[in-house]
Amino acid sequence: MCLTKKELRKVALVNRMELTKDEVISKSRVIHNKIEKEINLDCRLGLYMPIKNEVDLTMLLNKKVALPKIIDEMSLYRFNGDFERGMYDILEPTGEEMEVDIIFIPGSVYDKNGYRIGYGKGYYDKYLMNRDIVKIGVCFDFQVVDNIPKEDHDVRLDLLITDKKIYRW
Image (cartoon, rainbow, N blue to C red; front, side, top):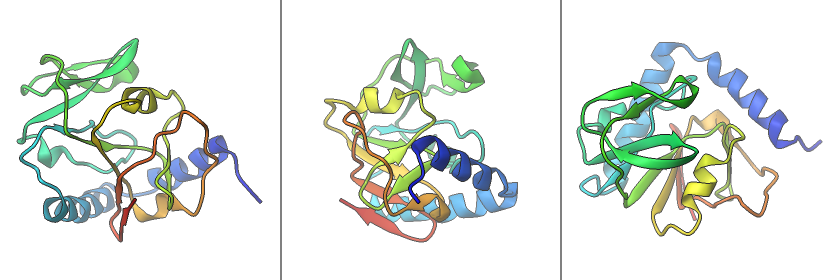
């Protein structure tokens, strides 16, 4: 039986919300350690503020970092140490707009072919379209499935890092 994107998202988010805070911290550290071994962190990084038990990469905020800000569409803004509450009540940076070399992309479900399901608004796919940057998904291993339904606007990742494995395309 093939599940729809909506059904896959719901199952994954329910499972992710069942993680304890300690499990999220522990698994996020494992992913962070893999990132430090695999990625040149001296370039401009696009991060995100974790919500709903997402992988927490805030330990990278001491690097040259930009974070999403939604003003009609998503753009990345330099993190200068200050936040404000933005759309969807997510913390957003107060700095100026900034281009990045590498972007870490959250989501609810990822597949073994390099595609992801976000939260259904399409902000990341629209932002990534026609941008030549390294796209890295980060998630917990249980969020990876064999295949997800793919649409024309879906952008393929370059790398996916989980607490158990690294996928490359």
